[in-house]
Image (cartoon, rainbow, N blue to C red; front, side, top):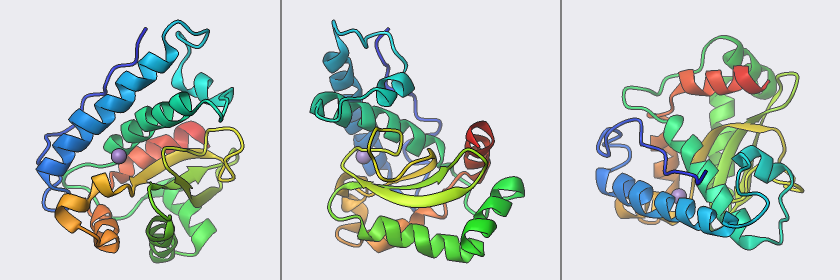
Length: 202
Ligand code: MN3
């Protein structure tokens, strides 16, 4: 079964003014679509063809650039779309809030650490909030389309919140002002979805 471009769970303009419709449309229908198509091309005829994306990551040959970049691009964007929502933002609740407070001291302190990870990721990449077995959470960042589920990536754990800091994610609206885009992202984080990811992978 080939991978399919996941449907966006809201309209392209739903995240305005924080993320503009044109950026969302190009990002989803061009960039994410290309990663998905290229992933399928990289898998075609190989022994991995019917594996899940998590199975593919667990045994990934990091020298296989087509699989690494396009598998990452497929998975990372799927998580990114799902952890955003219109009329979202605010702060996490329940056990996720407890875990964030335990790791960082407060939500504001978490926001600083996450924002710094996103702002200082040199070039293209992603910022993550991950959960480890046992429930501890950690912030990290990775270059390109790498993610914490890939072998040898120093940042480990299961990713439950993702922020794309490639220029294609913000340049039309924010140009070189990556920190403004990062700040805006906090207005569209779907904490209910992040909490679901936490509960499923802790
Ligand atoms: Mn992207």
